[in-house]
Length: 259
Ligand SMILES: NC(=O)c1ccc[n+]([C@@H]2O[C@H](COP(=O)([O-])OP(=O)(O)OC[C@H]3O[C@@H](n4cnc5c(N)ncnc54)[C@H](OP(=O)(O)O)[C@@H]3O)[C@@H](O)[C@H]2O)c1
Image (cartoon, rainbow, N blue to C red; front, side, top):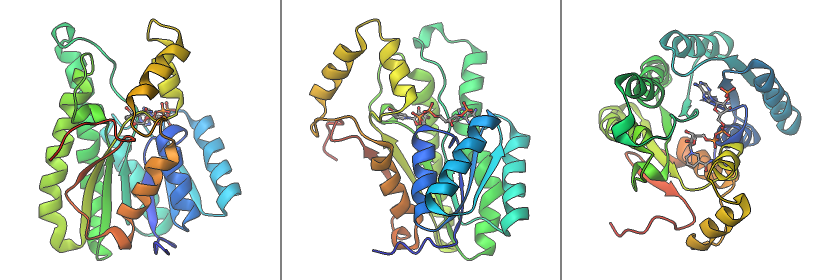
């Protein structure tokens, strides 16, 4: 199926590695022009070079920290100056630290809200007017399965991404008539350096932790970045435009609930 992504203009956050990188590479493979962001510039440039070499697509690295309002504005301005607009916005970055809720002070909460929630709000505010000018577009947020099935210790993420899910649903209602769909993906466990760090810091042999985790996943494996990226590509493409206001887990069946 041709997703009709050729020459579409996409911004993918946190894309020097991990899930963001996988999404950027897949959109580039589908013919989109892709701007990627991250804080560390050398790794970001290397990632852009790799995606360009592998796909032949135009890739624009824009160094930025998602927690800074001025960086969010500059990312969109840079992309518009280079390519004339924005069609697709994928909000993705790192995540706040773990910690029991009762130990978290206002500073920790403010940082989490800045990174997980205000980042999305700011990027949408900057990018969506350009989508409206172009007659439509797509907003896609990456959160985590913990946002819909909370785990102890993940309070900063759970609470701030809960806000993103409510915000995205409201936005989908407000932007439907403008031809813009808005969706949120909740990945389960995905093979990235972040997951390696979780295993390394888990206080147990990492291979034992991995095996225990895999035993709980109905599909019997940890997900790949491509498992997430394939769904993103559909949702942000013209083929997926009628799918809006959803929160979808990509978790190999880990989440057990019936809606
Ligand atoms: N991997 C999983 O199993 C999993 C599961 C569920 C949800 N998630 C969520 O998915 C997101 C991506 O995870 P991942 O595993 O792909 O992480 P990752 O491998 O650590 O990659 C994170 C990417 O985001 C960039 N980044 C981090 N903080 C940033 C900031 N403040 N501003 C701009 N860029 C930033 C990083 O580059 P710099 O450090 O250079 O900025 C890097 O390119 C996270 O929110 C994570 O919680 C991951």
